[in-house]
Image (cartoon, rainbow, N blue to C red; front, side, top):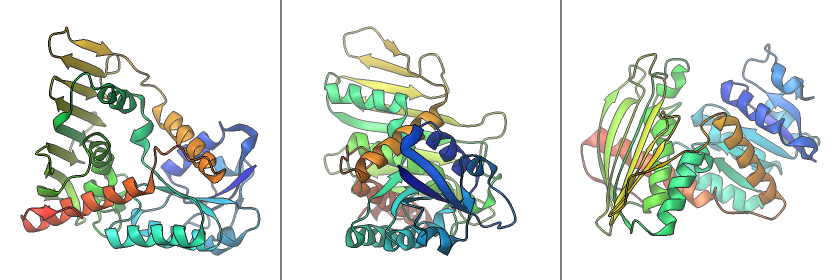
Length: 328
């Protein structure tokens, strides 16, 4: 049985606990550490987890793997500390808030020969997986352009998210999902130009970015914590190919995918839209466990997590300066 220790006890850590609870006897939650030492983590304790200090958890013989589910600026330090303590690490996205820190974590994972995986959830959501499958079929031809929008009415519930130093603003905390999808579907961009609107906490609350590619593809991406209730999350993706295009609207619960292929009628595709958070986390943990067992299946690759950080950092730099910025 893999014994998991939790760093963090916020709303997303609770979702991880729910997902771990669906994995049966192969996984147990044995410990947790949280910033508020006076507060319990009831969901974890119901699974048998014991409250510990951070150092105690990371050195515990009862912990094989660690979930890093804390504010974004702490990802590198805690992931590296866990890796050096001999633990495997499942780190929530983003891997880090800059490329140097991302490279540092990857180097530590290589040096310690421990498994590191970064939780980019959208790679396991049915609508995006299906879109990737349609692209892979080749019937629409190669992608030539794309548009991704991820807008939310949240952001104020966890103010650290909008702090440029703590959460990285909307780029690292929300739009990072779509930057990963664009890398998955189109490959790696060469440069980006961007403009943004800042939050009072210092990070960007809204950003619009245009990516350029070596083979003349182009992609537009926007993200914002600027909608107002009851809008909640509204995510749209469009991938234009040589012989048609795909549209994904996750807020369309009946037919979130529409395929327009040259010479054919519009195709509407239904996929599962309920309980996606827990289902996606269960799938991610399954991949993590297989990787620890020496059987990686390659959907959540560390080089992809590093590229997302590079893209996000370039977007912020481009918005800060007004310049076209190389993605390196």
